[in-house]
Image 1 (cartoon, rainbow, N blue to C red):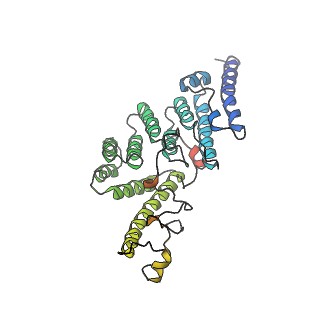
Image 2: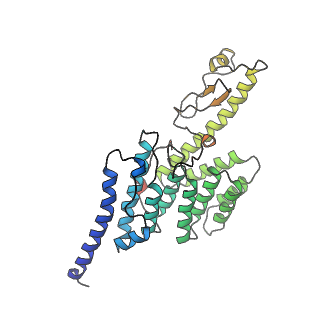
Image 3: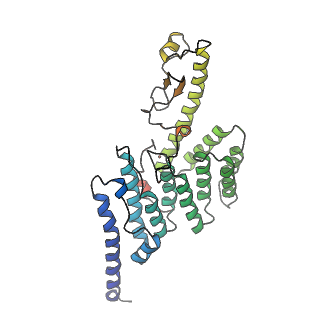
Length: 317
């Protein structure tokens, strides 16, 4: 076909894409839009594929960038009533336009599972997104590993997590550590060991700087949990029969501590004088710890590790 005959079709496709994306991008540029008014003019990935014709990959890039902007912008919003209503729809459209967009599945699931206020707290949608990726690439062991991880880290479902790790390990070419990870996950009392093993493997094998940074942050959280357990035992022993809750200053005077205990981020731990519990400070970049996070039902969908950098827009696989 000559260039002259192709030109009208190309112009028509560009016009459709400009209209569909322009309508939604204009909403994103409006200042202080109330969360309840945030919506997509086109919510169907199938419809968007028809609109963009042969420009699906280009449109997928546009919607991926929109998803990053929505996640990052909402996360940095200081309002207490913020929410992430567009995150899953944007990721769904992105992966419908490009069903093999690896970063959109893997990073998108991390964003979705992140607890409020750093994310929407929707591990169920994270799993749904990854399962959508598996429907297109049923031998993608990374998606199986990520699903197992969501079940382990956010749902605290060791058995289901282990089944997914075993399934991932059975895929030809999958790394060796998945087999040991499945076994460790099912070990009684091995939760901390399994968590550390998972994040260490992600840190060592990550081919993306943001994912590596997020794994390092999670490892620091696990270190903080271990430190708090030891400090709690020390504090409980120091209370003795009186039941009075001592302060860090009291423990320093009694030479039970070499200094005010700080978490891996350098922020001092706190003591709840009402309950006697050692707590991570809300001023810490490691807050909230996994054990402290709840999944609020009112919200529809790394964390302290910061938002995705430019590398999150890198190669699809």
